[in-house]
Image: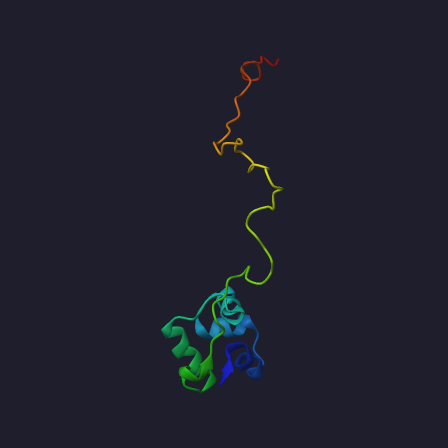
Length: 108
């Protein structure tokens, strides 16, 4: 049992060449090999045919969270007592009031 990447490399194909043979965009092959997406059933069948094996024998990388284990956080770390940007200390959204004189300028 081999991964899509191992099977592709055994054939000497690039991701682009495999994508052409399967009938998908090259990004799809990248996503399959990186575990970000899984091939659909018709694509798995086509992969099995191309590699001359049963599609059940292809090992799929688990679909993973792209930020898992990287320490990436969507929010910035704030110091204790520091409120989020765009919010007042009570958590209400802060809107900017446009200066009336700035909007009514007469530029020549």
